[in-house]
Image (spheres, one colour):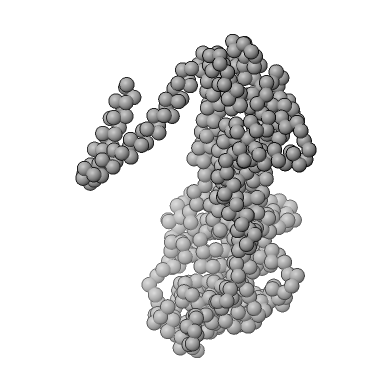
Length: 302
Length: 295
């Protein structure tokens, strides 16, 4: 109740401020109120979701969640393999997607002939790929595995491959934006000293763009961390009683573990799912906070 | 440290009121007329951007250890000419140079000539100070590092370059700090020091003082006078007084409109010793420009 009173206070204060600012006609005030309502409606759902998850999952947010393996008895079950599996998959995704994405962005931004038709098609498609539903990347990976004749899909590198393809366009776009933000004068200054174009990129433009690239990469990885759909398709929904321990190891990840437990009839598993969700949320929030910190702390103002 | 604004140069601030024609103050004292060897020369140079001809038929010879100023109204192609002298125009899409630009007798646009090597030997300082987002030290050391110069002691080289650029005293205690912390005038001297560090023969300056205040401008001008003994300097400037103060020779460009198509292109009107250009120009257009009747 106190929240809704607080929200009401914010709205009325904002209306007063606007009224002072000159917008006094009833129509514009009504419109402003409608805008506030839309914003609060969205926020309200988020808050309700987080609060109910917190309340439901809190009892099982204990050490056993981190140390125990999934079991048929919810009291003795934990998400240990899923947590370790998530770390393995995200780590491998990072190693696959980031070097490739940065290299692709450097080529497109610094070296590719912008007038060439092929490059324009590539550019357009990179933009489009960023908007494709994630399950399509799972299907693509599945098709590739089929062609290669690999039948055991539940391997860390396979899941990482799908996620890497998923976030590659996002990393390429973020890196290009960061490179574009480095003024042309910096490149010219470097070239005028007798540096080659490649030296200019590697020793000057790229280091100057690192904060922007890091921010984009972390946000992309946090998306991959919360992704379940492509991994479900790739056989990530398994009952693991061991720790994933290598690129070819079987794995499951936190979002899939949550999906798995939520579908069980026993109440105890729902609590476990909520506890794992809290952990996942905390990880995602931490990653986003890190991205914001890097952006604010290291971003170069030209 | 003394703030830069207190280091008033008694000689003259840059934007002093325009002197009457024929009595343009020159400082420091004019040098005796000596025939110095040609370092860089343009023969029948035309520069195109796509189908647009920015500059038409330029013939110029730049002499060693002299300062040559390129002056003229906006759009007359003086910056284009400057950028064609060290192949910086290569970086512009669709830019093309016809004719011969010879550096120590060799055509820098000939097949097989490495543009990177050309730019190392013909350095450039830009309109807006453009220090790299690195420390002061690394700004200077960047050029020698990327060009693979054999350096006995990078520390000594950095100190020498900063000393030559009259910046050492102001920055010697903060070499590891970001170059972005320097004032505009200091940044521009840092860019000059950075250029000196790779030991070029020629330094091109594209309106190096247009973003600076009069005092910072006068320090750069003093610096150019000192550097003239070891380098050949070619400067594009919008400021006629600046050309009169620093340059041994001055080339006046103007924009010429084609009578049928109306396309404008830059042409070289007159090139002579600075005193001659300012006191006794042979072309009426030069006379009109330096006396402020147009441009």
